[in-house]
Length: 414
Ligand SMILES: Cc1cc2nc3c(=O)[nH]c(=O)nc-3n(C[C@H](O)[C@H](O)[C@H](O)COP(=O)(O)O)c2cc1C
Image: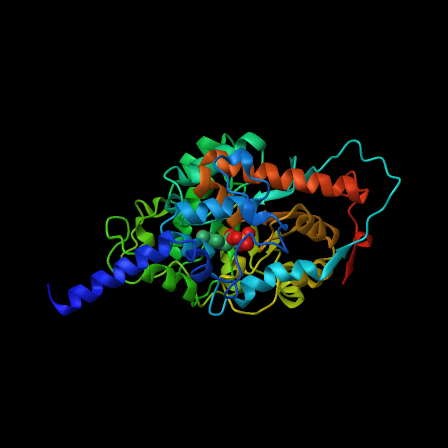
């Protein structure tokens, strides 16, 4: 054994020791200042550290599911889920943004019956909580998007499926028992884009959400760090090379992708939206709008809806939360199209604040992926159950029996 082999072995042993030790939670959890711990007291309760769960039902909040996900997943997969970009400032800002809004409760209102129904494009949902498109769910559980779809279907939540899903849109719709919305990465090749759109439409998707906040691969440093400490041989699932190979994803089956190097598109302009509207009968909405200027342009271009999103802090490092971006978008849109919002929503109170600021619905990404990684379908189900129960409790305690009654008067800037 040469000196290099020996030092490689001892480095690996050290990493294994680190991963097995409680210290792990202090060193590799991305997006948190050193010494801070996910699920720690302060934000999530003074006794959060004293609660280790062994079943989905035991989770008190979605952070409990994250803790199990973190333990279950290989470091590279957990880092993929957790990462923001660069210093993870936007990731943190998304959470911190909620503290900048306070809720003004009203009393003496009959809230014995809570009605959290919302309507989006003519369909009524029992809850405004939507499953955001999260790629590669099979990296978190073998049943991936199908498990998420079954859980979403059982509780009748709207689900948006990623272009980079690891189960096909047909399988997901079959598992869901109803159509899902389709998220589209624009790609640089119109023939491929067209084929993706036509397939989603044929499968029954009523809405296509074009992701406009990912013109390029972002600098996901926490992901890179997670990969570095993962000693497994990953070639069976990932092709050799620095990036995952999206061409293996089910949505690209039977599409010639030989000339395509990335599903992202740095040359995306409003012209793309017009072309897309011309070839599809699906509603076209944009995911990733965060300013009034873009919202006004979206109206001009006859876009059907918006998702205010910064990709869960994984797109640009703006340092700006989506809860703070939401008001200007709502004002620019003036009620002329539905506005959804995501990024950092973890509590019923977070969702309540967005509804009070004018959002029609709220998407969550990591919370249901944590549930999936922790306990499969049962974990997704529990994460949705928790968020729904928290929202309903908030509605009850704030004196707002319906979503419509959650007006701007219920929030103030701190
Ligand atoms: C692991 C992971 C994969 C994602 N994949 C996609 C994707 O394929 N397409 C997309 O538009 N957004 C994607 N997103 C962003 C989500 O749709 C959503 O904007 C974000 O997760 C919301 O923030 P949250 O995770 O803090 O709830 C992904 C997010 C995560 C965490």
